[in-house]
Length: 180
Image (cartoon, rainbow, N blue to C red):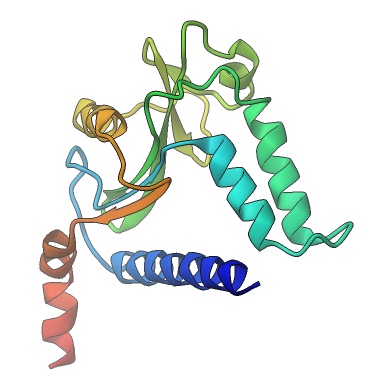
């Protein structure tokens, strides 16, 4: 029980940190084509989903349970996802508008149904998925390369948050100066 509570505490702490960084970043201005300001890496999606299921109360019909089921449905199984590389999502800016791009690496064959259903861009060994999904969307080569590099780096744990704190502070300087 204590171990479960500790896991829940750690998960909530990371979720709070990510939410805090996101709320700060909403006020920031950034040019397109730069590395993501915030990245989330998931080393093993099956383990990640299992961890979440263990943290969430097993109440039939619970909203959290429905969200997990929706994630499983969205991925349409995980056997096509490359277990040697991490799934990565990066937060990028266009002016003051933040959006996310996910990179989902696949093994020998991708998942054509997933690609079509979510308008994912096939990069040859990985899908790029602008979030929210947008037909005809494109991803800058700089962002794409950043996600590829992050996916190939071994992660120390199954869930990793990376923030370019210095860039976030620089981006927020005008707002902080206005408050002084």
